[in-house]
Length: 142
Image (tube, rainbow, N blue to C red; front, side):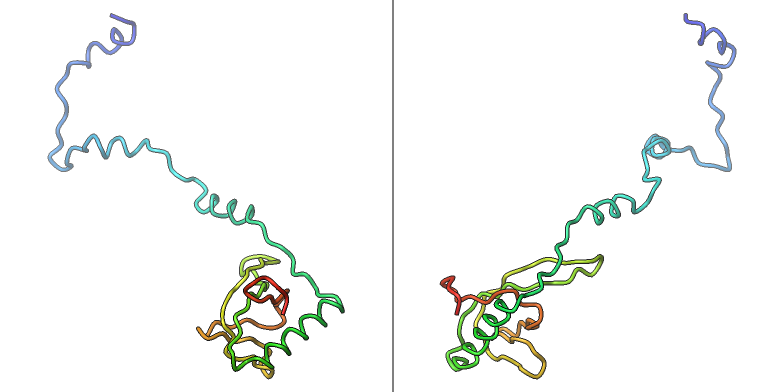
């Protein structure tokens, strides 16, 4: 017999007290008391958000703007054929500064010069100010 059992020998074999007012706690509930918990609720999500990378929007120089305008004019001239193009454009991040570039492929239904956007046949819309580059589906600049 070790020393711990010897100290409590007088109570170790006593019958368990059963309360009439409270129900006996199950082993599952008893174990749950000692389970780990998130002391800093939301901290993990905050760390993930902070580590998510964003890019800064590239400001087009004079030559890049000229090429983009030429490509838009060619699309407008050929709008009846609903040209299929790839557009690389910038999406602002809703949570922090910067954003990301994505490429969308589709057939152009209309170039809205009043609202300054390209509208595709599936009604997807891209603002012209967010466009970095326009290419044909074959990968050539228009």
